[in-house]
Image (tube, rainbow, N blue to C red; front, side, top):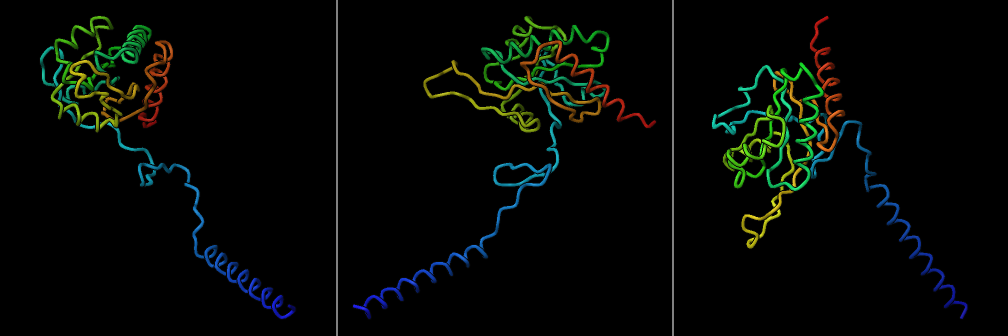
Length: 221
């Protein structure tokens, strides 16, 4: 019995030592995850630092039938909202807030070109958008295009868009999309965004702040 007990104790001790050795090896060889440094962002499985490029060249069609490009508005500040005319809430709210902001902004509004770019070109023809925008400030210019043209500008501005459409929904469907208002400077460089749900006073104040800051940056003095 004594011999058997000693043998059992020896086996258990050996097994415990082996397990601890394995744990030690794993502890040494397994790298400890490092925290992300300031300014780093995870995009999918990649880590990107800095601010992603937003904006770029585009060719679209305005509600008056003219072909327009990003160069058509060079020299003006662009206030851009992406949406669609069948949108039940986000779009009319954002466009109403933009309309109020334009009124509040006063004489400096002449330096701005507000744009409404559809994310649903299949339904949003020139005539449909023109009729829709009659409910908002007349200075807001509507833009549409082919599916390829819209896909391109959506990609350039990193807009989230997803059609909630089934085979049986026909022409009755919703489009999930981000609801930010983009501000681009007269050199077509991205400045900032504000949520479309912000009221007109807040958007007007934001515009004054952002445009003043950019003017200060551009002053060589």
